Image (cartoon, rainbow, N blue to C red; front, side, top):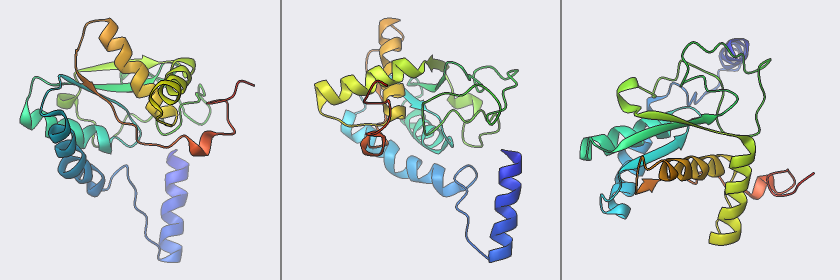
Length: 192
């Protein structure tokens, strides 16, 4: 990924272009601290004891977790990662995303340890999910609740179910941050 970043910055400079860089742009964190976090608090009436998020750039996890902990520091915030690539949970893991262990859960699990918005004091734990657990949860969400989410939504639901089964939380908030529409031709909805 370092080579991709290097080339990206070369092209931005060459073409005098704008690069949002969600991994580093403070607006990513702020949107969730100022918008999504307060919305979750309002919609739940503050009645939640955990939040789980499949981490991509870390902006939603960092912003929402920071906001929720300002309202109630006892709310537990869990990072969700692919079972085959738990890089954030295992700081000694040495997985190169490009040549490492592939996973199907799109939108995160980039095997980056340097996520600016995922701060240690926000993380209360880590939950890993398999590709199949994410797929199964996404399908159940569509069939039973009529919510067509993507891979990461399934990962969040699967992680929440694990926490509930382990009695680590009772009221868990998850994000369904991606539509399943773009995955209709993939094995997310059809076995191959």
